[in-house]
Amino acid sequence: MRSALEAKQISARELTKEFYTQIDRRNPELNAYLALSPDRAYAQADRVDGMLARGETLPRLAGVPVAIKDVISTRGVRTTCGSKILETYVPPYDATAIERLEAAGAVLLGKTNCDEFAMGSSTENSAYGSVRNPISLDRVPGGSSGGSAAAVAAGLAVAAIGTDTGGSIRQPGACCGIPAMMPTYGRVSRYGLIAFASSLDRIGPLASSVADTAAVMSAIAGHDTNDSTSAPVPVPDYAREIEKPIKGLRIGVPEDYFGAGIDPEVKAKVQAGIALLERLGCKRIPLKMPHTDYAIATYYIVATAEASSNLARFDGVRYGLRVPGATLLEMYRKTRERGFGPEVKRRIMLGTYVLSAGYYDAYYLCAQKVRSLIARDFSDAFQKVDAIVTPTTPTPAFRLGEKTADPLQMYLADIYTVTGSLAGVPGISVPSGRTKAGLPVGLQIFGPHFTEGRVLQIAHAFERAGGAVI
Amino acid sequence: MKITREEVLRVAELAHLELTAEEVELYRGQLDEILNYVGKLGELDVSNVEPMAQVLFTGAGSEPGERDTANERAELRDDILRPCDVAEAILAQAPDAAKPFFRVPKVIDR
Image (cartoon, rainbow over all chains, first blue to last red; front, side, top):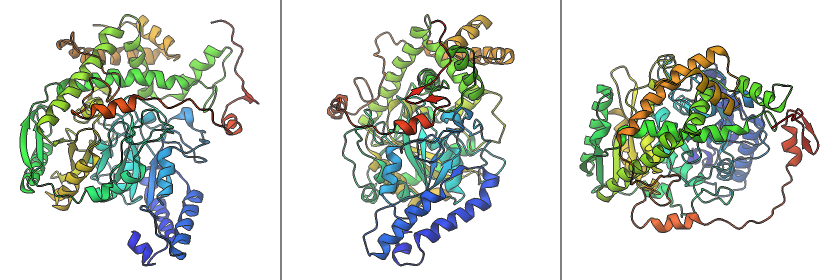
């Protein structure tokens, strides 16, 4: 894209216009975008074209059209979190990730649909309608960053920003057949992210290729004094890291990720993916990660507890919806009852319950202890291996409506992704063939904390060797 | 274990949610099922395990040698006053503002 711009084959403005034309054509069917930001996009495109005209060196993402999940604050552009409670909210400031993307030259096309407050695995929990999977229109795109994944998979953005709390970047990436990365906890600033579960939430990229994923990572990663959980750890040049050879790397394959509940076609494609990595010179090492089976239970206690606390801020006082009431408490209750959708209420209820007097030790404290055991599974494994390879999801994208009646079944869609979320490690999902019905399968690669470079390097070699079509 | 209707109502009150009768019944059943599932954590002996409240601090899954990084991250920045000139923009988002305040219904008790 940059070379096309530099060769003056196309201007950044023309490129932006072309993407908006495609969005106008496809979005009514897909519902991937909730809001477009053409004024901001064209202003940025004109800045890039001005740099080109003056012969200046273009920044890394110059003119690259990017979509932003609607839980990330964008100054002057409506940000709803997929919720009625924020239907009219226009943030007065930009998230750090947004500032960094624009500083790197990216053109922000608009905001993408998602499960309400990023709570879901199918994007069916959005108050603004479901997103369809561009690969197969009667199926979900995964979630909660389903709009971001669908936008990239349909060619309505070159890259997108999502958020991942229990799998919400990787799982939709797998469902829509594109690379999707959850960085290490603390790697990307969350300043301006509307919080769901603060000890788990991460911002990361979904993109058309691993190289593009790496380019976006380079732009958004790094310490930020506005986020006290962001890590002062130097950021390598991921574009360079991904070119390193993977021969000799030790790949751990935990048997616990291939047990009951996995779709046989998904299992076969992931095993074929692991065989491909072996042919590329990686050494396969069998692993046991014995607490994997407890991860969903742990996650749904920790995440809902944090959510019930974080979402207390939506009370009709400072922003968003207010439903009048005779007293302050009545106003709070009516506002939250009308503003939140069913899944958000369910999680607030569950989180409030596990934190309440009499249940705190049995649920919340116990889950925090099991979280330590799950994190230890990872640190033990990384004594023996350089990376861990698993399926991203137990099944390919399911049908719209298939799991909405049964919350627990929906939660189990995250069974292979929540482990890395709890441990804080980086992970990527990269396409690993398709089922007979043509549905994409995702291969997940985890690395130790702050080894995004290595994770991207393996994913890049895998993609280049034809991993998407095995 | 069976969660009762009264417990659902108590939790809704704590969470400031005014549930409809249908919601109370729906959430009673669903919370029951979910709590039953998460009860599997009781199979594990965690008596000698430290709780993990945050990533990368003690007990988190860092590799050896990464603990320095974790310690570095434990440092807090200095508390320095900085100008904040977005008060108008923030109040503009409020459902009911009377500059420079947010206006709310009269607080009767509590």
